[in-house]
Every structure is written in structure tokens, then in C-alpha cells.
Length: 272
Image (cartoon, rainbow, N blue to C red; front, top):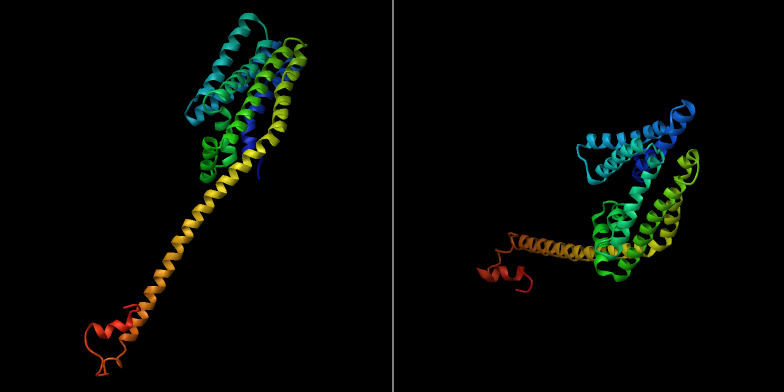
């Protein structure tokens, strides 16, 4: 399978590009071509913003998240040129994880968790049976809901923590180091969260597939009952047709003792 068509890679590719473009732009433009740090970092940020804008134009829609990304980029660029501080362009990448982490923590205690909407498409893979099973587990299985809220809380805390650490690193190490080191909290946080989530999510997947299998078995039972009824009726019809054919054999009417009318037909129908 091509890497481009891998769904997991497609989901993470935009994040990887946004993380790589500022660093690549900085090292190429600043160290290789001698441009100022502000210009070098701005170029990398603009590339990431242009990618977001291009995708929105191509799809002919601008959803809330890309619009927020472009707004943050525009505000950051304005602040950079007003203050002359290129570190703002590195620190701005902490805004989205911080907002996402805070929102995730809130949804743990109020309403439907944000993790529900993020994870469901990856787990169910468009299978209507699994999607219905997931919703049923969320609504009716208290242990399932508690476990999902716990995982949601961990991801919210993880995102918020990585955002804070990124800002601390960016403003406490040399700029050339901050360009790369500022990415460490995000990448390291993702790895830790994935490793922690794997054992915690195992009971969720077990409950989901158990519920989906039960629904499928119930559906198969209903289909089996309906399927058994049809052949029975077909067999009865075939038997009646056979007996009618036997009743229609020309030798039967030649017996003079057979009375005319219904009595002649009655022996051909079982239970008559």
C-alpha cells in the first residue's frame, strides 16, 4: 500500500509538515543564505499557512479549525514584525495544543468527550455496525464511559503540558536550538500518550467488539428464522403441487365409485 494512501499517515502528515517547515526554512534561509532569523522563521510559517489555505481553496470550504490556524498565523506575524521577536513564531505552535488540551479537559466533565469524535472514525472505519456499537457502549455502558473519559482527560493534560513546555524551551535556549528543541515536548508527549493509551483502551475495544458481535448474532438469528420459514412454505407448496398432479392423472376419474365434487379432491390435501 502506498504511504500516501495510508489513513494514519494522511492524518499525521499535516502535523508533520507544520512542525518541519519552520525548522527547515530557518536552517536553509538563515544559515545557508544568511537571512535574518525573523525572515527565515516567517518563511517557514508562511509555507505552513499557504498549505492550509491551498487545501481550503481546493476543497472550496473553510472550516473552523483551518480558519483559526490562519487567524493565529496572521496575528503572530503581525506581532513578530511589531516586536521583532522571532521566538513568537515558534511559540505560536503551542497555542493549538494548549486550546485543544484545555477543551479536552473541559469535555471530560461536561457533555460528550472530544476524544469520542476524534477516535470513533479510526476505530469503526466506517462500519455502521461498529459505529452503532460504539454509541451504544457510550450511552449504556458506565464502565466504558468512565474509561473513555479517563483517556480523554490524560490527552487533555498531555496536550496542555506539552504546550507549556514548548514555550518554556523556546524562551530559555538559543534560537537555533529552540527551532528543533521546541518540537520535543509535542513529539515526546504524543509518544508517551500513545504508549499509555494502548493498555487503557484495550477494554474499550473488547466491549465494542463484544457488543457488535451480539448485535450481529441477533440479526443472524432473526434472518435464520425467516430463512427457515421460506423453505417450509416452499416445500408445502411443492407437495401440494405434486398431489394435485397426481389427482389430475386420467386414471382416477375412470373409477366409477369415486364420487364427484369435493370428495374426489379431499384425499389429495393432507389433513383435510
